[in-house]
Amino acid sequence: MSDSADTEILDIADLDQEAWQDYAIEQGWSDGLPLVMPTEASVARMVAAAHGDNEGFAAISPRQVVPTMASLAANAVMAGAKPAYFPTILAGLRGILDPSYNLHGSMATTHSCAPMVMINGPLRQALGVNCSSNCFGQGWRANAGIGRAIQLILLNVGGGKPGVMDRSTQGSPAKYAFCFGENEEESPWLPFHVRRGFAPEDSVVTVMSGEAPHNINDHGSTSAEGLMTTFAHTIAQPGANTVYGKGPYMVVVGPEHAATFHRDGWGVDKLRDELWLRARIPLKHISEENLATYVATGHKPTGDFLTICRGPEDIHISMAGGPGKHSAFIPSFGGTAVVSTRVKLPSAGA
Amino acid sequence: MLTTTLEALTVYDPRGALRQSVTPTAPRVAALAGLRLGVLDNSKWNANKLLRGSLASLKAQHEFAAVNYYVKHSFSKDAAPELIQQIAGECDIVLTAIGDCGSCCSCCVRDGIALEQLGVPSAVIITTEFLRETRLTRAAIGMPGLQPVVIDHPISSITDAEMQARVAQVVAQAQQVWLGTVAA
Amino acid sequence: MRIVNPGFGLVPAGAEQATEGKVDWLNDPIVLFGNSKPNARELLEGVKAKLAGIRRTDNIDFIAKNSASQGAPPEMINDTAKKYRIALLALGD
Image 1 (cartoon, rainbow over the protein chains, first blue to last red):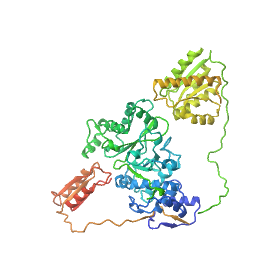
Image 2 (cartoon, rainbow over the protein chains, first blue to last red):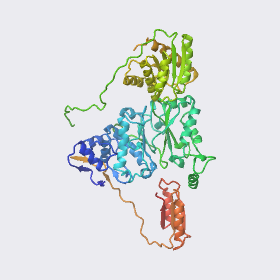
Image 3 (cartoon, one colour):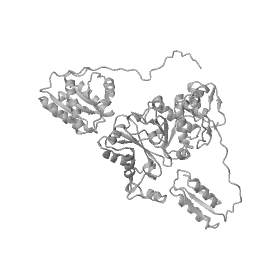
Image 4 (cartoon, rainbow over the protein chains, first blue to last red):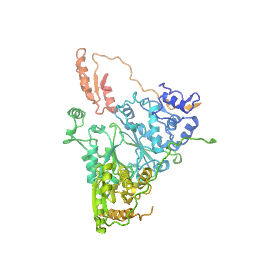
């Protein structure tokens, strides 16, 4: 693909639908699916929706160019996002550009991580973000559009071309779009963003470089204690990047599991403390060669176990999903952070 | 502001054309006494408890000629055709549970419809959360008249006292399903 | 027709380059900078052994950052830059 970073507006031949798709894919702009054409008018509508957000952006790794509002908006248009999604997309991008997120590492890695995007606050309803049944899956324009727009920005402005600068060994379906909302309405706990110090009326985007969700199925346990046995042992696995013990992870508890934890008096702090103590990998599950490397790099066993994070504060708990006995474990890339950013809306001012 | 005039366009319906036949349910029974009752347990958590509890209550109320208990061992799959044939040959009415998740609900409804097609009135127990899925499934398979027994969700994580309340819901509704006294 | 370039961006001002200076390849201190990846240290130690044939090695040191997937802490970079004139980093595999 030719690097055309120096021209903001491209004058191209008049193209019909099919010719446009062929052209855009040839430019390397697509995730493989058709793209909406980023005309000046559609980009202008997108940019207008972000008038509350006037701060500049840092250069995006690995290509290291500084985006303009128009180039970001062009990607949102191509992703099929509505203009109303744009402030949320920008807040997600700001989190990803926080140095602690480690974008350059997570883009270049052979690991299968994708930017996980979780939305809290009143914008979930306003935008129609799915927080309930199938929240990680297909079928909602807001989840798909916001998640895909962020991916296209990282591809086109960031330059994370699969197989070139994105060296993921196998990739993941989460790399198309990985966006969901917390099910605040059915959660027995305080919303995730409120626990992180934001106001309930703030809308907040939380990002983490993570794997696609790993299911935690438990239909049989009727107590918090029973559920924790399943949760801890599902999470304590030697083949996730959490094995290095140096980064965060997310646990997205389904509403029926959350209700059982809550009924037995287990809040978020108790869940984190118990996971910290119990979600540890037995040394017999770790090969000798691996263990030697972990020990040599400062990750030493605790008794007969290897911890999978630095402490309870590395364990992030949220609640999402619909009816059913399923929850999810989202291991992080490892060298990353969970970053929450408030969405700046035009009415609220800059 | 930009104004555009929408032209009338003809597009293809991406859902395809529906060709559905509607099969009626089996004839209802006039009374329960003297009938052979079959129970099909899908081996889901607590299905056994729910069905055994319901059976005890039903047997106390009616003199059945026989009560046959069947178990299918994979709740996410339809019962084997041989098992459906066997149940239809050995029973006059059937109670089956439990559709309290997506795949098990779909399969319970399909088992119930298969039995109804063989002439056996079947009471299929599902939970409130899966009522919409039940309605879509029965319509898709062509038996929109199948009346499910709808009890409170959830089932797998409840206490014994909560289970007793679910049993009462099953017993009341199942009889109406077999007798055809439930409003469509 | 005209579209907005989805790859458009501005190139940020370039980072300051280290001042040029003459390096004494046979005597200046060298840091072998490992990133904790399996075999990074073994590879760098092997280089040191080879260097023994052509220069002094008493001022060639091995250090390592503890996370291969993250940049080294700025203090570590600063301290290392003050102490050494030549650096060899591994391993980007």
